[in-house]
Length: 377
Image (tube, rainbow, N blue to C red):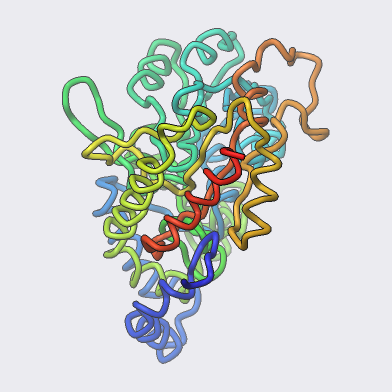
């Protein structure tokens, strides 16, 4: 059996090395390292894939979130609602811009931001909602957009973990996650479903004026060289990373299908155990692209299971062990523990198993057998 990796980028690269190497070589041959043809090509290709009018590449996913908020003109003191159960980058940029983060609980079933918690958190100072499509599963964007319209709020989608997923609407239509709110942001960190070989990110919007503003922000506030029309930053996707992404984007749906297939096999093996709550996967599973495959371990020793798997050479991880409202940087007297019952339970129960495009049946069986071996002791 091949050595099990949490993310097997080497095996993935081996299958596409000719395309990747050729694309990178074209950059090296033309010496167009910043804002070169590969960046513009990737921008257009991603616009077509997402069905969105404007993609603005940038240096990383955290920058993408920050620049999206800057582009919307949010002001210090404005309240921004987001999920308590996610990575810190989402709330980090809110604080950096001197906005007021408002952390709310998540839904127990899908682990995404709770619709009822959003409704309860809205005040006259609320200006935006940041749903996070956690672990690759699309949040309930129809409900979120309805709330935003009722209260005249911006919606900034954190799509770092769910590129390629669809959001379904009650009228039967589907739209790509990240392309529904007023603006979306994603990361191309190497381990993402669409990852480059360094750092990278992008911002999406259908708003022409907002796209124009953001294009200036990412380039020092310039639309014309040495003319600084807005306060900006230096955040650009370099051409070599765009070359890698151009080679991988045509394969993204195939990559996501491989993740979904692995998830189905995991769930089939684990779903019936009394101590496991596994993701439910529908026959046409396009709302979840499984950036992570995350179990909940109930009435059993989650930490002991993690140690057992590691001892057997199976990498695994706990995303996320500490709620954001309990992090030293984001402590606030406004937050009460009773406001976060789901998050506080999830951090004690979740564990993520290896998930990537190269998992094979032998590896999946060894992993699931090892999980069951520990829980059946």
